[in-house]
Amino acid sequence: MQFKEVLQTSLQIALSYLDNLDAASVATTADLVTLRGRLAKQLNQQGIPPEQVVAELAADVEGGLIGSAGGRFFGWVIGGSLPAALGADWLASAWDQNAALYSCAPAAAVVEEVAGGWLKEVLGLPQNASFAVVSGCQMAHVTCLASARHAMLSNRGWDVEERGLSGAPSIRILTNGQRHGSIDRAVRLLGLGSSHLKSLPIDAFGRVQPEILKHALQEDSASPTIIVLQAGGINTGAFDDFLTLIPLAKNYDAWVHVDGAFGLWAAASPTYLHLVGGVERADSWATDGHKWLNVPFDCGYAFVANPEAHQAAMSHRASYITVNAEARDQIDWNPEWSRRARGFPTYAALRQLGRDGIASLVERCCGHARSLVEQIGGLPGAEILSEPSLNQGLLRFLDPQQGASEAHHAKRTDDVIAAILTTGEAFFTGTNWNGHRAMRVSVCNWQTSDRDVERAVQAVSDVLQGKTRNEMAAQFPNAAGTLKGEYEI
Ligand SMILES: *Cc1c(COP(=O)(O)O)cnc(C)c1O
Image 1 (cartoon, helix red, strand yellow):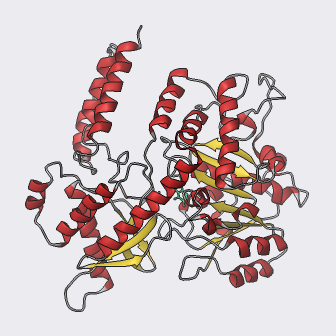
Image 2 (cartoon, rainbow, N blue to C red):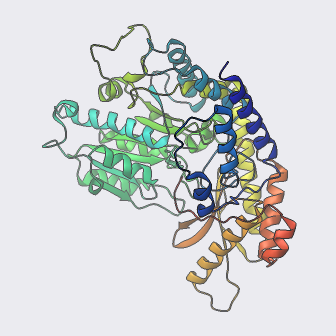
């Protein structure tokens, strides 16, 4: 059995990694030069036994892994992996199914079909909506906006799949002014053109204002229009007012797409359900599995209220494709051809948690986000910029000198974020918000505990008290790496 030793080695490595997450530094401890030095070997002429390859890989990446699988990671918006999802993900690799079609992976097609139905139930979306399991919210936007492009143009007698966009009526895209950059990329990939994206000014809570949307819709009511609303903005977790905005958009025959990468999961909890009131009336929705559902990377979901538009945008038939009329062929809904059986870990995650477990995961994370923001915000030199309404909050750190400017506070905030990383105790990232430099707090890992929150607050408190790096290094022996990131995940 060629697999036995390598899989046993991998299991040992995985278990020891996961067991050690609580004690290990959450930030990296090996820098770029070190990692390249270890990994950039000459490609060997002769082969190497598989268990040796895996063991050496694990040794070489040591210190270059970010502890996002554990409970003390609050950077960007990144989830961990539920045990059942991780197990099913391993099996997806062992079974190595090509989940393009029912005929080349029957069980994978059925698992995905069932998981899609469960997801619609949990997220409160229409049961007759079509769906696709894609690599992330980015590709979910591409899938949904391709469906929108089809529908908007076919309404005007233009077959975009056949004729392309040259000479087509131009589509305008009105979006929440604090949209995620993945919307821009989807628009570019679909040939809709960034210059057709119009940011709508938002209110103090990061929401599109109905009067402004109405005005924009009236201004050019003849153009086919897509409106991108937000369920959970990356900085403050802001939700657009779907109950007001979607009916308004419908009056002008606009297509409403919702970016709900993490925020759509509010629907799973009775406590937070009100935030997404009316969202089910949209035309398409994009969300992630790898964030709040805690499915391993990569996994996102696209949902479209009008299955015909979705299928017209994605489906393809070739003579060698074996179609089973009864079954669901993923190629009719996905942008990919050959693909990983991503339905397995999603199916497993949903079953491990059950409806109550998903609700309590959402509520737990929101509670931890609130505690982090309140407790850190209460430390001398810290200021709360945005209290979490869900699982995202914002803080900043003030430069104590007299007459300190915005730039001084921004530098102090970045310095504190970097210093927290050196403790290895907690991981936060920076962002810009309403003209301020800020530290974002995002909680979406199922493992985050009260103890993790305590440790994170303690680390920030130590940094603010100006403990020296050496003092902190003595206290947190794993500390070393630093990392700054501007990417919006
Ligand atoms: C993470 C995120 C995205 C992009 O999702 P990926 O899964 O990284 O492709 C889009 N929108 C929001 C609000 C996000 O948080």
